[in-house]
Amino acid sequence: MDAKDIGEIASWLMQAGLKGMAEVDILSGFCDQCRQHGLNLDRAMALMDTLHPVYEGRAFRWDGNQVIEREFEYGPSHQGIASENWVRSAFYHMLTTGGDEVRRRIGFGEPTDFLGLDKLKEDGHTDYIAMVHRFEEGGTIGEMDCFYSNFATAHEVGFPEEDLRVLRKLTPALALAIKCTGMSRIARTIAEVYLGEDAARHVLEGKITRGKTERISAALWFSDLANYTRISDTAEPDDIIPMLNAYADAVISSIHEAGGNVLKLIGDGTLAIFKARNSADACAAALMAESLLRQRLRDLNSQRQIEGRPVTDVYLGLHIGDVFYGNIGSMDRLDFTVIGPAVNEVSRIASMCRSADRNILMSSNFIEALSTNRGNDLVSVGRYALRGVNRPQELFTLLSSAA
Image (cartoon, rainbow, N blue to C red; front, side):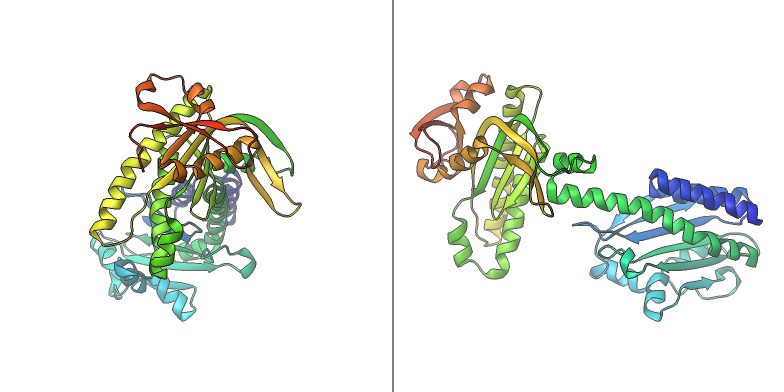
């Protein structure tokens, strides 16, 4: 492979990174091009840690001769079998010794002393090289501080020195292209995790101007945990966060499954919206989320009772109205959220669940917009004065919702 070939592959990698091509496709394209230009390459893997609430990183694989799993996400590498495998890897060896490269000519008597090398040898591979390219402090995000890669060949002479020279020259460009896409993925993940999917989409589309909002009509959800203060005062401190996470997961997953968007987590409270082409569909989606939530709560509470852990319920207020949806805040700290009287009202409605001894209360506006045949399942609980609201509101509940 001459300088012109190397330049063409490097240029392709730069374009792939700029286009935001999927990481696994970048690796596959790189390996295919290397083979087309005469490099004896049969298998490759690249991986990089990320910033994600569940996964530690993502790995991408290519094989020129057989179908394999092309990509996967991996969890924490500091516990269980994952920790044992990580310590046995060539990557861990390089990180702990400060090296940048490890090579094993496994088809010529050198040891298969790292994870996976015995399988590579069994499959007929003769030579293996692993590399790590470290990022400087300004180029790291969370645990994403380096790019790992390895390459193997089944060629009868292994990797000629010329092939190794090419890999050493091109792998930094491969790392940069994959990192470029990885950074975009991290940005999306952070936005979605902390803002919610719909708000994240608006922000990533560039709608971040302070004060820029749109007026929308939406079904509003506000929920919080019943008896949270009492439970938090009596439960062991180490049990509080797992309990909050368990119940928050039940609430949020139910909202998302029904097509809603969570905008805020306020302690044990959750603010969400349901948008649809018409009000009836938005309200129906909110009630679907409520039904999903009750099933999840039954399962969760049953399991927690078996484990001898405290259980609780969720108080829920549902309302519908016009709100302003967009960026609110200062010049250097914005929140993408909803504001307006309807938002205040839904939180007040949820707070009345305790007084009404019901786990769900809905406004009359919500019931009117629902336009459903559920009349036999809906019942008025009377008129209530809501704090901060000018006139008493008639509230409704589901017959099956006694707290």
